[in-house]
Length: 383
Length: 131
Image (cartoon, rainbow over all chains, first blue to last red; front, side, top):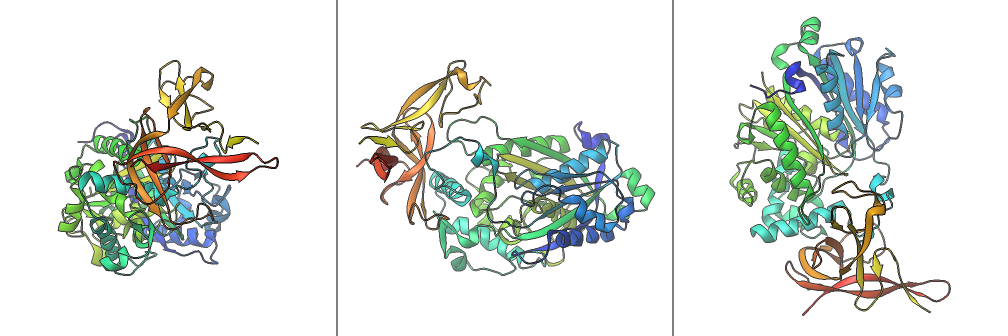
């Protein structure tokens, strides 16, 4: 039984999924990227654009007014369109808004998409807040996570090689994903080459390119009215969003926030960590997968590295971590990333993931964190 | 000629240097960096803050040598660390040398960074391992 929550008041389902491959910045416009993903999602769901009641566009880099000039090329139907920005979790928050819209009863069929193109820098607002710090720009995101890696490895006697094995696994998964930006199997030696910061190397840091992802969210009324194939509709049983609280000095905010948001999502779903078959996690940097595996309760503190080495988080293990390749291999085009995670979870729950299929997948989670700090978690279940 | 800190509201260029934080009079929360807006613990406005001196001394919680950087300064490689200050707050800062490790005791010192139009020396804070 689900705990009371807006998603149990009026159940919502993902009925269609679509992607534009994540790739290095190209001459392709964001409009073309986004339309590719939305058209694929419509075909996948077997619905028409005129069936869509509302649209949410997750994007962090494009600037204002991105939605209509893109989506009106499917037909200027005049539906409500809202742009959602929540840093790296922008796409995740577009999914959350679409779920809320359908669960509230205001709409029956809503599209949530993510689309972005790199524009040279993230343009993050916290840097404009007028709060200076001692490090004065010397600590960029990869160094923030290199420092977390240093603390974790010292505390748990974990080696550089053990952390690097996260990237070996996720590059292997990405090699099986035609939508991934990086599609090469990498050896441990390759992953350990080209240091960037601390123990983190180039292949332990995600590529930030361009792409698009879309999901169609529908109510049971919408599914019945449009004759959608129920066997391919996966239920969203939790949607949790939290921001960083005030933690004790020195506590790693990303993991603490993940623990809180994950717990809220598990509570809403009436499920626990051991129920997860698939987990798309915010592995922008290899160390994060270890931190979040523990924060989400998939294993005890300090155990994640040995669980990775044992193959327990491989496809075919107890819970497949980042079967898409994760941010490390599939890529992190910012706006699309959180939507793309939901696409992968749905594909896995439908048993349509081909060579990277987690056997008997019934429950999956999508987890993103973003600058701010924000965290968004969705749990999906095969009905 | 005088010695001035690059960020005077963060650093007093004394010997030894002092890191400047704030203390919330309402809830006694001590924080760094000093905040111009309000208290994250109790929500008091910054008018309820008093300036709070922190010794530039502590122990290394985490350390990383940075090999790639998007700016010419500091030149790579350089070392950054998360430092538990003896006065409570945790700061991130550049550490000189390559001998810092988790658990190392470190102290702050001033390095000349620049000179202004009238010859004043602009200094910034670095940490180093105490042998």
